[in-house]
Image 1: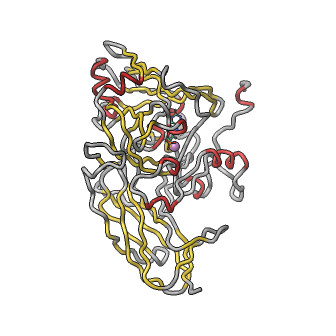
Image 2: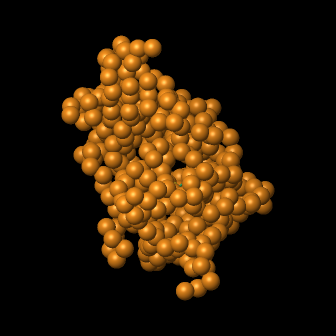
Image 3: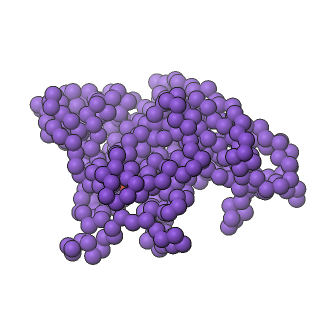
Length: 381
Ligand SMILES: Nc1nc2c(c(=O)[nH]1)N[C@H]1C(S)=C(S)[C@@H](COP(=O)(O)O)O[C@H]1N2
Ligand SMILES: [Mo]
């Protein structure tokens, strides 16, 4: 036992009737989700985008910030923000989702940031592609992983660390991976990684390292905490598990009608009711969304909005914005008759993955894409 262990908790799963603790509430109050009504926006307004910060937002000065590329490269590089901004500029519309989304709804509940179903958002990220920079630095033929280091520092499960994530070199060299300095056409806000973050389209949030200071190429697999200990799908504490990578398909409903303050149950008036929402997957394009209004007894296809590659950018970019990695809108016309209902939607993608209706449980509560349940009361005044 070290001194740090005294203030740091081991990973654990809640007891059967254990309520959410003040520690979990403290995390939830810092790290907010997307208000579900904000699913109405194609691009999530910056302040409504979900947030996940392991430690503290670091105190960084954009004018003095530098990025170093080193490790197994022929020519290590150090660039400031001005140099990065002079490089080719690209905007991509990308849906980000936290790997722990849905955790608090699992039984038993893994104790960590207690997300419900809405740790998601879509932004237009502007920056410069990473691959040309790595090629300029000269990635060695023996490269295995690329490690991205953030300026934030803390302790997790007794281990003091800078936030660091390794990415396989083949993923780091994908055309779509960006070093982003703007979000929705404005400089990154402090909470989203200012002045520089990584964006890895298709991957769960933990890969998109914020407050980026260093990129190091390794000739071996990165064995740092966030890859080797956290972010692994394990059935029990001794299971080495498999790494969390790409986003599993998910559909969310923009809850219809209006809510009760405490229960969040929706009240809908009898008659025609448009049930709509968004669906996404980091593996392959979404190919279908089905809706149930009877708690899962019957599923009916929703209408999926066309994928619109090349649509005009909300960020005011002259060039068309690539939205292959962004969520798609879907809708279903429901005729609501008085009664109580549980509404759900489930997404399927082109890889054949379908959202499960049984919880995909694992110890960390990762990549859980169990269908959302929205309780609705259809009642006249
Ligand atoms: N440096 C650093 N990068 C980070 C994190 C962090 O705590 N520190 N959190 C990660 C996680 S777990 C998620 S889900 C996303 C959240 O990005 P957002 O807050 O911009 O939505 O950032 C990722 N990048
Ligand atoms: Mo996350």
